[in-house]
Image (tube, rainbow, N blue to C red; front, top):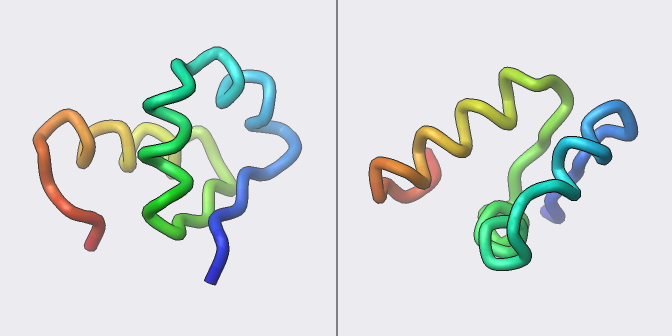
Length: 51
């Protein structure tokens, strides 16, 4: 499965650092809403692997 960033989130996603974007994309996540993005950022900030 490949990561997906919904078009309505792209502008916000692109404001993140390249390292953070890469970290998110490596997790094979589906970012459809701002809440999906917030959830994965919380997981990363806590040093947890994706669930």
